[in-house]
Length: 366
Image (cartoon, rainbow, N blue to C red; front, side, top):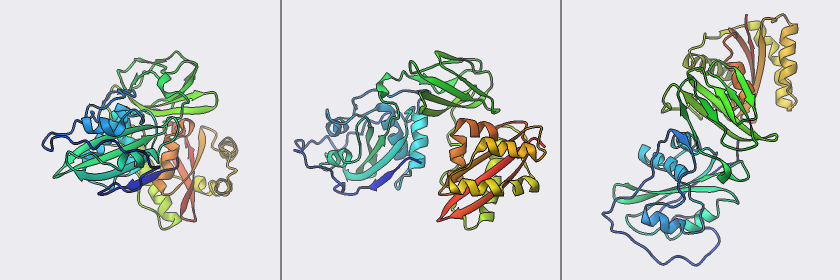
């Protein structure tokens, strides 16, 4: 998981960065409603670089790399209710608003409506690094202006080189690759992996949620869902963060429940528990905890044990069971294993180490 920092700023917006000459105090008519970017889009794109809201424009100035789609995600947080806001909700809001990069920081604070938040520019400056983006919005909540700032971390060296591309596509459409010279990988709703080097993907011929990854060399620079023949859902696949488990059995129960729901969401046959697969997960769990787990060797071991009609093994670590599973559904090959329609049985082993979940899941056709 990417490093994160969530700051709750109130009143004077605590946490200011290096001292800079403050802008001249600016106000707007208190009765004038804030101007908010759209919280939804059917495409991934950075959008405009100048806010329409005059107070937000003053905060951003010429120094902060404001991006409209990231600000649209901040809009969604304001409209959905009050803080605390979670990074999980911010990241899903970014998907729906069309911002294609990870959100890593949230800053929130309330000010008298229509007034300039003097400390906010410095607070933002202290939280973003070279190449980062910011999405700043001012929303009206009762008698105050609520300021929400999201910081995004593009994983590609020149995010401006990325072309916009659709998140929602018609069944049978092709996706034009948004970055010249990049290689790509897609996982279909039934776990089929396709890959290539551009300029297009070929037909996306299954309706449902696809997973799209873009690489420059060995580095993954985009990892996003695409929705084919369907609108973007309002909620993500997993309701992160999930309830922290109190025992290893609870991890197994939570994992089985979540994977059962995942398969149902993709209209795939449910998985049944298999005691032998559970036993065979214990040895690779040791290697997963030690950091030496090898998925290819794990699948080969299952085949050698008699699961010759199709078998796979996935493994993860996370602060909760759902965080752990989220690392699987957002990694192409592991997502493909979980969505393989041939798989009908599963067995797992889990361990809690220093409050973190370690999980190995074996899958087999029969």
